[in-house]
Amino acid sequence: MGTVLAVLAGGQLLSGVLVVLLAAPASRLLALGAVLVALATWPVAASTLHPRAPGAVTAADALTLLRHLGAGALAAATVLVLGGELAARSWQLAALIATTLATDALDGLVARRTGSASPIGARIDMEADAALVMVLSVLAATVVGPWALAIGLMRFAFVAASWVRPALRQPLAFSQFRRLVGGGQGVALLIALVPAVPVPAAAAVVALALALLVVSFGRDVIRLERAQRMAPR
Image 1 (cartoon, rainbow, N blue to C red):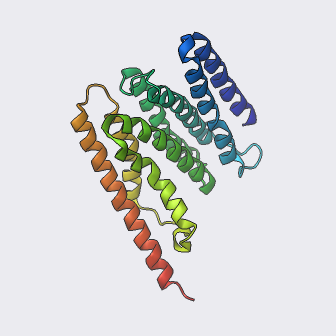
Image 2 (spheres, rainbow, N blue to C red; image 1 turned 30 degrees about the vertical axis):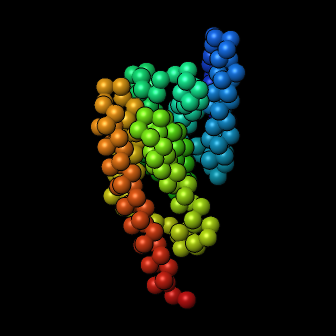
Image 3 (cartoon, rainbow, N blue to C red; image 1 turned 180 degrees about the horizontal axis):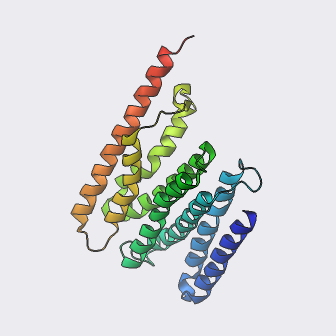
């Protein structure tokens, strides 16, 4: 899998060099920043695979790495959007987002079909999802407002809270509601970035997704705290 990582990262680096060279002189510094942001995602991708034994990286993991690749490209695009060099709403960007989100459904399907589902694979998938949703939240915030950042920050806030609340470190039982709400966040953010969707409608979709996410995290916090109180001392 080290070879796969090297090839994917090398491809992204080559593409980045071309982007910088083809950019207008006044935009080259911004383009370089975008490329560096994209490449910074690869140490994160490599670190998620560290718990795997050599040769134990699965086909589902490879699909998750493709999501890291997409997230890196979108992170670079976000830098250009924030710099005013790229529109946040374009069909090309929406297509890239949709393709990247599709790997989220495919890696789970492949893991189940091949019998390679595992806690480590689920962790890799979760970290890739968190990174992607954070990037999409920043993009959506440029369309509907900065409050959309709450969607991307929610997972990181939960992790930060677990540092001071031991109850939040306990494993969560499977929840179909949590699964559907989590999967719906990326779709809602994609809808907000589709050019044909009116901005008020986009804001309504993102607001609904955020409300459901708050409910989902709230349920989990209550259940974990309750389980901690009821646990034998």
